[in-house]
Length: 252
Image (cartoon, rainbow, N blue to C red; front, side):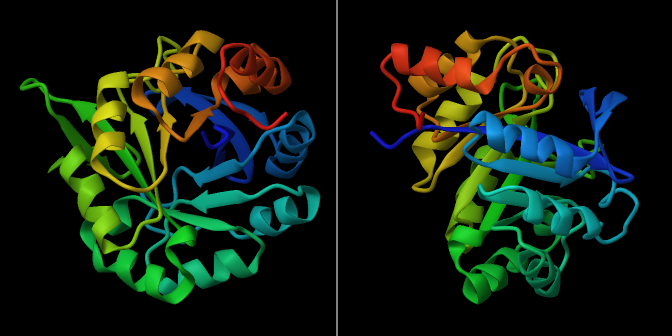
């Protein structure tokens, strides 16, 4: 079994790392490069940075923090938010990021996934999906930082994204985001069983058991979280030891 990745998520707004619940009630945490280095030293396998207001404000991602982070850490990191063109991919990768995440822009222009994958390789292209459960039991894809219901089916969109060239899928549950009640295991399992690329769980971690559940029940390749790491509720080294003691392969 491949080692499962522990991935802190850092939402960036106006050059600061912030965190909220269901994309609301946002509080300030720290500056990206300092927090990124802390997690790198703590044993995180990767980091993900989202410029959370870039898409909604219809602007390009702030690249200043990307360069600062690249200087400070020695683990792979992904950057997303406001990425609209292949040139945006190029600028972010040149600043030192290893992967680029697309969400809203890929929904409106799916060809962006294909063009970026052909230009930089599928391993650099991450499709992030914000999904919310609908009344009929399916999951709809939301754009604009969780503000706009696109009507797209999340599972079908994940499959299409991989066919277009995405090398990884991040599945974020809007229902569970910041609530600390656990990941949406049903959604994760369906998507993980439907695509042949790594799937990363996002939205809902509140305790170590939730990480274990995501791996055991949904068989995800990585587990992403924010609140429990930012507020010191779970230490990454402790989490990795817990997972290892429960027969999950992790990098210690």
